[in-house]
Amino acid sequence: MKIRLGIPKGSLEEATYSLFRRAGWEIRVASRSYQPIIDDEEIEPILLRPQEIPRYIDTGIIDAGLTGLDWIKDCEADLHEICELRYSKLTSNPIRVVLAVHQESPYQTAEDLVGKTVATEYVSMAKRFFEEKKTGVKVEFSWGACEVKVPELVDAIVVNTETGSSLRAHNLRIIETLVTSTTRFVCAHSVWADPIRRDKLEAMGILLTGAINATKLVGLKMNLPKSIRSDVMAILPALKNPTISPLADEDWMAMEIIVGEREARLLIPQLKKAGVSGLVEYPLNKVVY
View 1: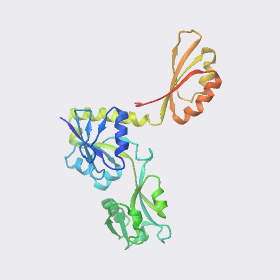
View 2 (view 1 turned 180 degrees about the vertical axis):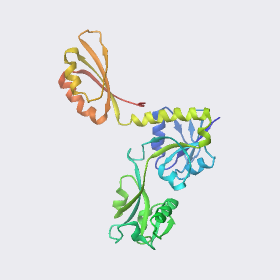
View 3 (view 1 turned 60 degrees about the vertical axis):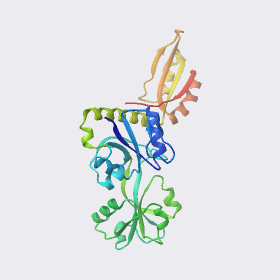
View 4 (view 1 turned 90 degrees about the vertical axis):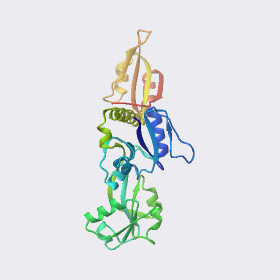
């Protein structure tokens, strides 16, 4: 039985293809096609807007998918979360769904917007937010580009932001954060209850998480005289135990360690000065803890 898998179309699309590639799957999609091809006979990928994926899983149209926590909350979908996947179109940082107003507006809090108009793609989430605040506002749906609507067309917007650059470019300021969101790999509860599909989804979760873990890590290999072992160990980061192997020359040994990319650029010159030779840095596809 194939798993119908929702792949997010749009800003996350290329980052998702890259993640799957590093996890071991190749996804190809023809121009203008919503039916990608994957090199796994047990998966049937479908390109969908991330806004729609939670609803289609919740109603049983697809089995699983990758979407943001923000859209799950907006849909109020009851789904099983397989794992969190911290990746986005620009960084590995979470996005925020925020309430923003023009820099020169008098509004400082959500309560200040009583009787005003707010534009958003997150209509359900925004309505619940203002209801909880007991703030009567008009929430209207926007097809995007909300930033250009303030203040001429609407008084405020609820949008997602990763870096805040678009808000700053349009002279907007954030007054409240509704939710902090990352990408989630989710499925229907009925799908998770099926042992065969559950095993497949668990395996996918392990590999995708492993690819995420490896994003900012590299491996370091090196050869060194045994006489400087203690000096080298003192240079290596605390809590990082290297793999040590003997070499043909009994006076020498090999070490291998996994570190962050930023750590590597500091370590390599120090290790070279300490007397290490044959230093090799190599990329990692997956790191499974």
